[in-house]
View: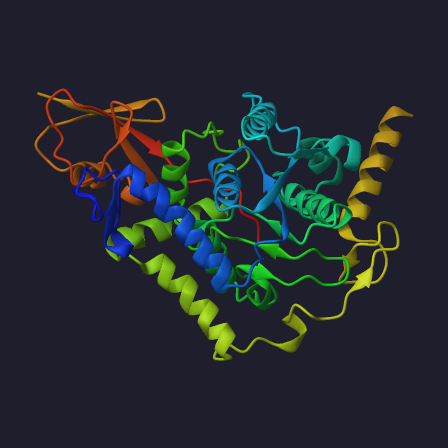
Length: 316
Length: 68
């Protein structure tokens, strides 16, 4: 197969776009597509300060690389989760993030979860019994809280994450199966800032996971290849597998599902109940001040208090 | 006459002469979930698998997304 632009041997064929490109042209195409998404969904302006949440994986490091190549002012935040999984997963992740930041002379903020929450993610999940034997629930909770805090304290205009099309479609599929209207109301490429909440954007939302991986490989970005040891068997991966089997039969099914959803919501065809809308009433957490849906302490602060109580009880 | 496909340390011996895409489908590996490389270079899945080929498949799926 040949590159559509220059006729050289193609490095990747994107069946859903009916487009095959060589390495060089693919490395031009990815930033172009990212820029189009940034503009289409009004994610941020050229002068805005962007905080990129990086994990050491292909998506977040690839996104940081693309934003810098596009000329944006992008700094990184890494959250140390203390996940080992027998492979030193978190350590590997931090090493990759630091190396990338150093090589490109970029600022990387690092936040250590035990210093914030009182324990690493697996220990916090065990102590608080959250998440049905898996630490993913506590992990998501801690990451959202910390990323938001760092973005607000650093006065960044926007927080960018490396979520790709496959991530978005798998979540959309899961939320649709469950008719989770609250999540459906909030899911999208850009989530507006509200008092206490930083603006959040996903510039890779229209790029398939295959494309972000190919970008990282072709740019020779040293990323963590191994999956998070706790992701195995997750519902999210089951949904991704189903959707990829559909995509093999019907190229473009994933992108069409996602874009149709966004259009339906934008046009009002998909009307969600008012209570599920993103501007429903929020309260300030009595401990940290971040917004929470119910009056009193937010879930993160309750989890943190529970970790502290359990550790004190164990040591006394 | 064999070609080898390697995915996450696991080796699959294949009969050469078919396209890489057909080989993947025959192994029940969704082509959307991997990037094939030969001698370190990305290749497309219309490539005909040749005798002696060693094709490494890079898994691209990660499961770290959360509900919001």
